[in-house]
Image (cartoon, rainbow, N blue to C red):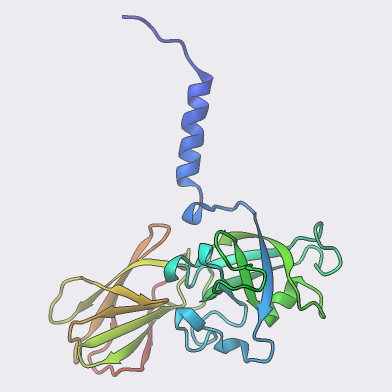
Amino acid sequence: MGIYPFSWAFVWCVFWFLFTILEGINGQGNRWLNAHATFYGADQNPTTLGGACGYDNTFHAGFGVHTAAVSGALFRGGEACGACYQLMCNYKQDPKWCLRRRYVTVTATNFCPHNNNGGWCNPPRHHFDLSSPAFLRIARQGNEGIVPVIYRRVTCKRRGGVRFTLKGQGNFNMVMIANVGGSGDVRSAWIRSSRTRRWVALHRNWGANWQSSIDLRGQTLSFKLTLVDGKTLAFFNVVPSTWTFGQTFSSTNQFY
C-alpha cells in the first residue's frame, strides 16, 4: 500500500474551511465590513424608534437610544432584531464629516425599507439608518447626508435578564422578547405552560414578536430561546399564573 506525501496545502485548506465555518456571529465574526449610514428621527424621541421590530420603547426594551434601522440585507426578515453592531465612520473616505477614531455600538430595532432616494437601503447594500444620538457619536453636527462607515457584529451586553412582554387576546398569544444578550438575535423560541409541561414552538409573527394559538391564560409560563449563534437558554417559571396581557416580566437569566 502506497504512502501519500504530506501536503501543507491540504492542511491549510482544512484550516481555512474550519475557520470560515466557526467564524463569529452569523458568519461575520469580528471582520470590519463596509457600509453607509444616515440618521432619522431627529425630531422624535429616540426611545420610540422600535419600528419594524415592535419594540414599544427601546429604553424599556433595554437598548437605550443608540439604535438603528438596518437595510434588508441585514434585517433578514426580522431575525436581526436585537443584534448589536459596532460602527466607525470611515475618516479616510470622508474626513470632512467623520469624527476620527470614534465608534458607537447600536442595536438593530427597525427596518430601513427600499427607497428611490439613492437606494441606499436597497439590496444588496448594507446600510444603517441611525438614531440621531448614535449618528452624532461618529459624525459631525450639521451633516444631514450619508457617511461611509465600517462595521462589525459584536456581543450584546445587557443589564438584567431577558424580558418577555405578553400581548394578544384570548387564545391568540404574542410574546415580545427583548433585552437579549449574547448575539442578541433570536432564531427559535418555545413556550411551556404549567398544564402542558411540554415545549411548544413559537412562530415569529413580526420583528421581535412571537406567537402561539394555545390558550395559556391562568398558567405559569416558561420560555426557551436559541440565538443565531446557536446558544440555547431556558427561562423557567418567568411568568406567574396571575399574568395579564400587556405585562412585562424580566427573567434572572441572560446570554453572554
